Image 1 (spheres, rainbow, N blue to C red):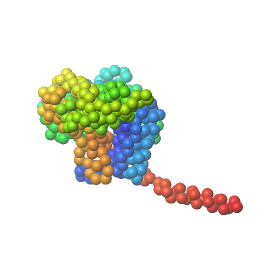
Image 2: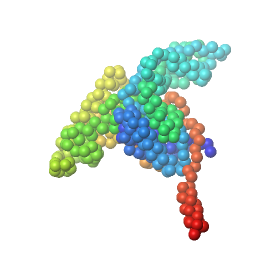
Image 3: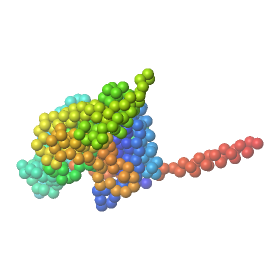
Length: 416
């Protein structure tokens, strides 16, 4: 059977998330039908480092989501990240030649086709062409020019470039898992579509998505995306600092970070001693929470300083009047908003996926699932997020097993 299904796959450094959803008719809300998470061991800082392991994690996450949804999917939107991502701004125009000079969808397609002819490095491909603003006969500030009359249609575009080998490795991993890619979507763009409010995009906002391997940045102003950047410093570096400083294994360092860690000492409620498990000949020890926080705070402050420098160098520090929105698993660290407000000097909030409907929606109402929640919505200002995908009802495994067992028992007695 055919149905409008929204399917997303977030390939993270620490986990792979798959979600299957259905849009509620006449609404921007979506119902989550199935959701699955699998440990990720095949990616490093947003890049596929092992196709086999990545494909296995994809299969596991999609299998969990499919079983819970009761359907099988064969096509997904896939999130893309990594320091190979770059963005440029490009302005171009086309002439309108019809008798009534009315701008149509075909003219917008010609405008995009013209952008695709620009020269880019041979090892790069265009991931997104997102119009920031349209101009008709030099009149700017136009969001949708279709239906307007004019002789010249112009656009300022935000163009995202990605490494061709990086995209090919993602494609191979997804196809090895038995799926096809509908769209590749830059992860900060996906996250922004699920956690940002339209008023924030209009006034000016910087989204900072702190993952395990990368921190993704998306800046919006006047309702349009203005800048994107991926930084290779994120939650895993914090965990590694704890591991090296305290001499514990990675799993213990991650647990200490989540259970007792703060991003800044100012956020500590009560400075208690915590147990550090010894390794090998080293016995257990106790340290104050404030010491753990000092280790974490140094790296988090460095990360926010890098992001602040990026925002300043891009020329948007004075334009993000709505402030900072933190999302991703790294934003769950206690005291994150307090440290961000101190470093950026701007109001900060935590971004949680919005406009979710019923079903399993409550399971992804967390910052760590902002990207996968956005992937099922598609690209703001880009292609439609809905697509027709063949879905098959899951087979009733129990009945098949029973039938097979009955035949084997019958064969046993026949042979007596």
